[in-house]
Length: 365
Image (cartoon, rainbow, N blue to C red; front, side, top):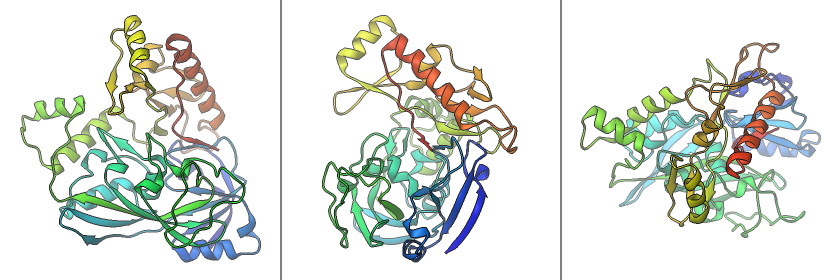
């Protein structure tokens, strides 16, 4: 277990916000977590789990102990008649893992190429892109209870996945939480926020593969390339091209990817909005609700390319808030306060025009 004090976090978050961790512990194995929890001083402190920092807005220095997840490793765990089951360490970069699976001949994750962040953070957010979500390929995960130090496993049902949601985003419903024993079931309605840290994720990748080309951007790319039956590797490359054209490189322009969730409304609410805004971009969902494109709503309110302080709205994608300052300078970079002030102004505009409340995706610390 490696413990560091007064650690700069600017290079640990993709927005490039300058902040410091009073204490940072590098977690490179499950034993590191147990050693940390057993420590008479550190183990009693509140903690903040940090992966790739691609889904976080730091509004100041971080007082809780930062657990920097650096558990690595990628392997084929086993296979069935229908699936390859791969096991990935929580500290691995998601995109590197997607590229690795394809290099091994394991298809099924190509639509989620170039999503920033680490594998351990993926189940928390139930990440997704271009018609696919993590839950579609999820098998199970291992985690460690931050109170008892016990390891446990969860399957998809126990993770309670939803749109950009999981059991890890909800606080426990009662002060004394359920006891962890081996692969204990998680009672529905209870959360694991702040209670557990993910160490390994297992994904089930289909041996019988079909391309998922439901999104318009992919259909346009298919027409442009003139390929009727694309391979998984080709779709991977198309997704990388599409995302690179729409989203800024965090190493150049600090950002946290899509800043707001796409809101969902009822069919009746959508019809009411369409009556006023016929061009609104919307998608029917399997549960009968309608998903609205948050980027379109923001753009319609005139925010694309606008700047407040050192925070701005990306000129190629209104859903992305960016660092207009110097992401590599502690003095010149955007602050978390500036980002949240801009986000609040956008939320107000969208609500006043459409009656829709946008919900931020990133965790605000």
